[in-house]
Length: 67
Image (cartoon, rainbow, N blue to C red; front, top):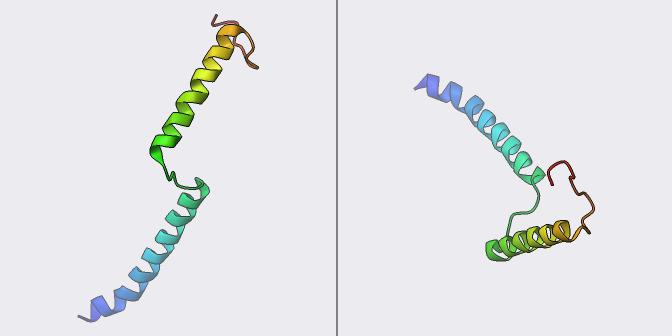
């Protein structure tokens, strides 16, 4: 019983530090995605636009070694 009482404060501190580190890491990734469907649609639209620009030759970074 004494061992639990002695170890519990250190364990609580360790858990709080690890939780803060994980939260900090999550915050560094940016804002969470609110609407998954809208985000997916934006990604597909951007890809399609860039693909068409590459085919038309109007893209900014055209890799000529792969064409």
